[in-house]
Image (cartoon, rainbow, N blue to C red; front, side, top):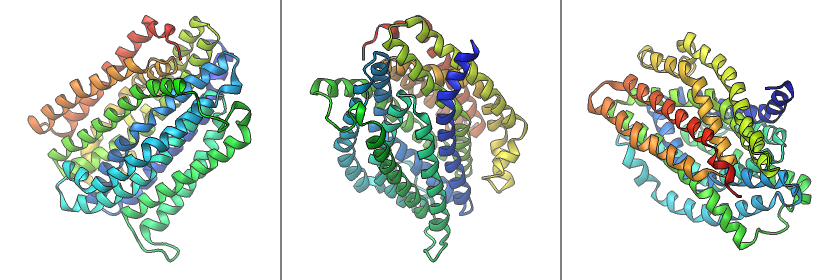
Length: 440
């Protein structure tokens, strides 16, 4: 890999990594605040967050569809049409998201009750989930904007917008959770309100930048044709289903861990959020790979597209190996930011070390998955992701956890194994190059 290619990767990926890291640092700060309210509040927010993730997955897939299509238009020399898929995605976010929000809001207590029967967790988690649902449309639009700005090599705008959103979110959470500046102390409800307000603020900022910078790319000038809207839906549907089942899988994981115990559920919430922070460089690099692959395919250079994914993976492995080392060496220090009881720290120690040992390899899988999405191979990515999670990991997690009584450590060993096998599947798929013939 040449130094020029490395600089290209980092210039595109670092703002995205910064933005995504900001997102999960926000999640960790939020969790640290909620953690002071007790294990029931922490467990309730954890379940509510992943239920919300599952709720907006129906429209989150537009991000990869917008990115793949817009990057291909840029590579083809048709940048003046690159915002058309974004226009279509924004329209579909409202068309799908509004009725989805209404239905889920009315059913929120019943949905949450399917996963939890602890009265304390229900009291904290249901209102949190209800309020977070009010941000579904904003999340879908923000993801679609992210796909567009990444496709046209303007990840710095995405980064700056997220920093603004997250600064507002942290400030609002502090005020609303603990009742500062004359506001009532709303606890977990305040955490949800702060997040939803910041999401809609982010949408407003993205629209302003769209009018300012993307009018020459047909931003909001017109909708794509019916044929192109159908193609956008076809490309986004597998990704949406993948994210839906991925989120549902984590929700199911919370249910499985909840069968082991409330303490284990609180620790699992912390472990998952730490893991999501750790893999964000891989996600950011993966989005860079998707853009570079899509643009290369737009130019008709299949070999360059193939090589970009491996070059990005090399950069990612180095980054994630350094992060993983901290989890291996300082697990108690990291867990102690969120857990304040020695028994909880002991539960999370070895699982966090396992994450640290495997996160660099997991990064390769994330990058290749995004590269495949950038090439338009959303269908096969969906099948591998759903199959590995639902046919392998979740049955195994239930068996070794509640079934055989081996607890949280056994469940996390199954989790690490599933992620490793998924990475191997994406490596094999990328090497086959069947993605090179996909038209978007």
